[in-house]
Amino acid sequence: MPDMSPTALQTILAHLLTWGELSSAEARRLKAEAGLALLASAGVAQAAPGAWLMGPALRRLLPGTSQEEAWQKTCWSLPAYHEYLSSLAAGEIARRGLESAGALVETWVAGQLPGRAADFNAFLDAVESDLSLPLSESTPGALVQAVTQRMQRIERESGLDFAAWNSTLLGISAPNEAIFQAALSRGALAGLPDSATETPSAPTPIQDLNAELAQPSNRPVFCPRLEHPNPWGHPNLADDPAWCIRRYGYSSVPLLAEGEGGSTPSPAQVQAAFCQHPLSWSAIQLGLHAQIQANSGAGETLRLALERNSEGLPYDLSIAVPGGAARHFSEVLPALLSGLGFHLFLPFGALSPDTLGSWLEALLQADILAPRSDGVFLGGDFGRAAFESQHYQALVKTPKPWRARLFEILKGE
Image (cartoon, rainbow, N blue to C red; front, side, top):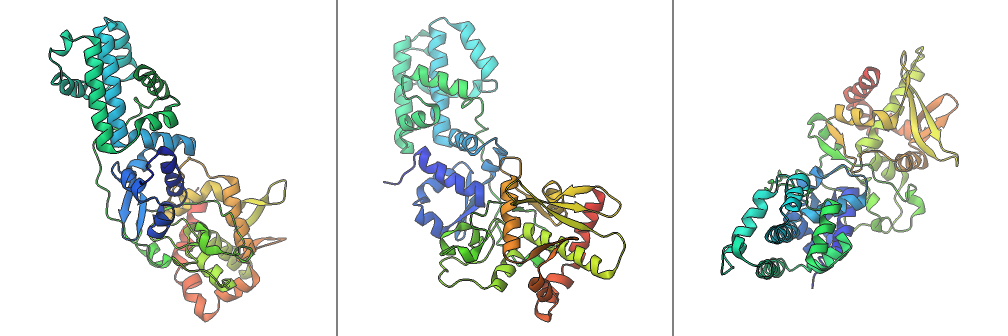
């Protein structure tokens, strides 16, 4: 039987929030196809040729304060569980109404569950058709029995074990009154989105980065933590999502195609991979701009400086623009990427210094960037390669207008 428990969905969601997509091979490896289909039914995931992507419903739930919050809101919003929780709430509200607790019902409906009355009434209309008497004349016991039968039907049709879902997501499994109170207090009912579904737009595969820059697509750019910033120190890069090519979103360093592995990549391969991710590409272009200005003998120039934490690890770049105040790369990165036609996707609303530091450390390890006493510039071998004929067009000449745009954005910040 496929695993469609909330715990299984948590693993899938963590991958989507980190990388924006799962390849078909990753989905098979995680045995995630059934869970992804369930998430797709709510627009949380989206099927694409050879991959599963983050869907529009998940983007609407973000940013969140944590992965735990995003996971809970996602599970609460899935159609089957949404219907179950709404049905349970409607039954409990109607039962207390029959028990003459009108003031309490009014507090729930008007104060804590505004806008849900139509959903509850639609369910109770269906329940009434199962009762021998009009709902207002029924006993609380008859109502509870009819509601329970309706919810059991929802559970059978969905194939989900709602007792397990309640236990995992609400911390309780029975009775219905306790489940309702737990859902109410945790916001599982008030936070449910509108049931109308949105048809996701057809995704387009990533092109070469220079081609993408010439045709802005507002494609998302992720900044996941690189657990192994030194690819030469990692024995099997094929098992590390950070180095596997993504087809639809910029999240990994696109070094290995699906299924590749084995031989250690060359420095040139690693450097070329970093030149295909907008985040590292932007840092490279700023380093190149600073180097060109410094070599030109100009007066005040763009100056980059590494900022390190107490352990000596990099966590940010300080950027000083002639005639302006120093800014931080983390601070201006959203504007830089937006100016290039992309958007920085931050599921939790902030860019972690440790995460950005892992990218800066990787650029240093690959000799793409190198600190000197007068700033940060391109690494020696990489800088020379950038001006060789086989690299000049892609790294220096073609990107020139986009490099100038980055500098203009910095000056205008």
